[in-house]
Length: 149
Image (cartoon, rainbow, N blue to C red; front, side, top):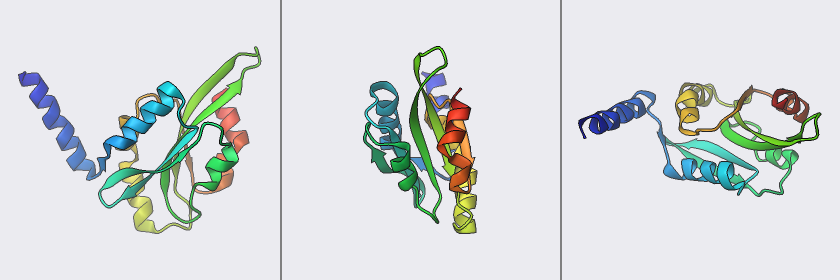
């Protein structure tokens, strides 16, 4: 029991250090994407002092739909379930984590997202590839395909 209590204290202090809470819905929706393939993508945003779900992409939505869901001038985190076929004709998928920080977003917003990213990413167990982008060209489908293989 003692070690369990200290674990809770460590978790709380980690939250306090980053200053950013992660809403339980974020972890729940990510688990649904990972285990049940309930969504193609999830976009997250920082709202006040917590990370919340901003948009859920239906399983049949495309990468273009995902790209269109990211605002032009605001930062976001996102996960995308990328399905592909290997050269050996095997069906595979990889879960990508995107840190979207467009050049046109406010400096303070970029700083908040950058300082909270690693803490948030640790909450999402199962991320396989990370992509940081400041411009849509840095996360084009060609780049995602190249990183998947």
